[in-house]
Length: 290
Image (cartoon, rainbow, N blue to C red; front, top):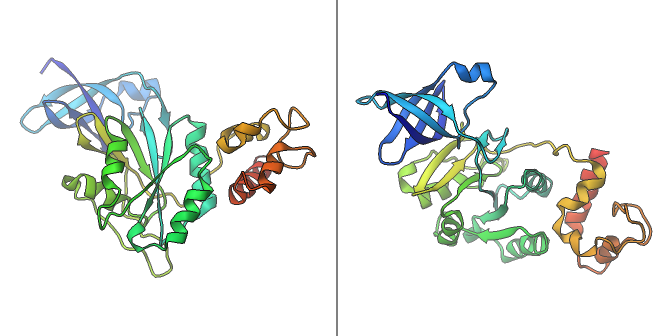
């Protein structure tokens, strides 16, 4: 066919890009060689123009990648409206250093982010309360869910409505189960948590799932490690929303909130206005960036 159609790349495996075209269905496409020459690699989330080569077998060629609003390398996605970091209220235990790294990562790329605390049906109330207090002034939304009972799933689904959102976080926290609960047709593979408390890795590639018209969830391989974004150390403070009310109130204009006297942020820490755990990790990130 000569007609160029528009679609969204929802999955890329073994050189094929699966393109969802509204009203036409899902096509397995090859990318034209010209992308290699331009230094462009199609990404999940890309809006593209493609041409059907075999209508009966639903095959085609991707011929153009439309301009991206954003893109990130890990996970490899484009045109992301937001991110949801899934952590477990039970096992595996929350690794706050990793969680704060992921939060910083999305703040750096200016992608709105929220935390989904899953497995709340099994959790002690003190654990849920600890997470609420820790991130209360961070500007990050918290949604508590249970993929088992369905609690909070409608709230999460509403939060995703009309967006393309990355659903990510450590393995074993129930990301795939949440996607299956919101979108039963996904039939995603899920894994138990191993005896040592580490999630078994089940998601092997980034894939978009169409939950509703114009609503896509990117389920991504679980994070086990993540580098701190390349931020100038003295600018790290601007990625912590809980520090914002105290900016300009320190004795020194260029205060890093680490060692300077007369620091308004450290005074707020001592009075309990800033969470100590968040601040201690901020100091570790600052030291690593230095």
